[in-house]
Image (cartoon, rainbow, N blue to C red):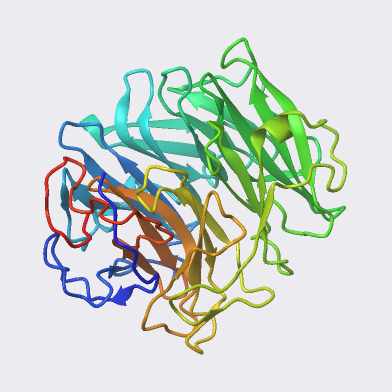
Length: 454
């Protein structure tokens, strides 16, 4: 995989008429492709839910599913095919041409599943439809799809999370209802004969990651409306395989009323296990921080949920960096969206992207920004990504994802105030390259240019 030269984090505002090969020559060499919600889309929250996925073909196709949350349709876009980018415009799936009964669902929650099911279908996305008590899984390979329905279970599909493969198997899918969560492989629950049932509130969010090469963990955030607390329960796969999940830790922070409203996982410190990132992105009174927990410390913790009984390894806050003039004061929405991925394309520790849709940019209130941190230096802002022609109320960063595109990992940001999806090519945020590093090859190893490109 090639890498980008060090460049400013501010991305150039670019109309969406660029092809895969003609975006060189812009001042910072980091074009921003803007995708507006389809005509007739029912809400400006388009872009709050983003789920990338890819097929496993010899000439892979990179896709992304986008929705506006509960009650809105899900739209698919093709991002790249093989080593060539696609000029993203019309939806890949023409959902608006379908009858209501045939649409792909409400899109209350989305999860990308690169390989899923007993027959190892690739390019899959799970779509939560809690109003129907259904989770729809749509796979690009073979145009395969399936529905998981829990009759009589309130809110099934309200939260989803991809579970990374362990022991050489396919990806799994975690799905939550109002008061419990399951893990699915193919069409069967595999997280014990009964669901994981936290007994202290409603499930609001899920996240999953690797414990080691053979086990995964599931983080379940709950909210107790009566008592005003949020907690995160961490369940670890047992030694008997997929059939058991045992609670290993319970996290709580009484001062953070939205703790656990948004979570993400990724191996930020390079120890082989996925760290758990927990933000307070669902609260009206946010502390504007995200907490990073090292998994080995969580597993060693007692399950008892005492306030702040497990200290985070890092506390991530807004800060300053080269690039746009962004200001993230109290309650700027920092942590409303999280994503982990190798944006620097250095094959070292990945980056953590934190959306702050309420940030002021260039004096424009609530224009929004995405703060990016290197996994090894979570206390320092490596770069800030924002629209260089910011609009007040745009809420850039209301949704965030790191997506595979033609062999690179690129940043996607939803501007939920205007119903837009921004694709930031070749930002290279946080890169620390040695002099003379090769920046000229794509995923296939072909020399393309001495300028940064996928």
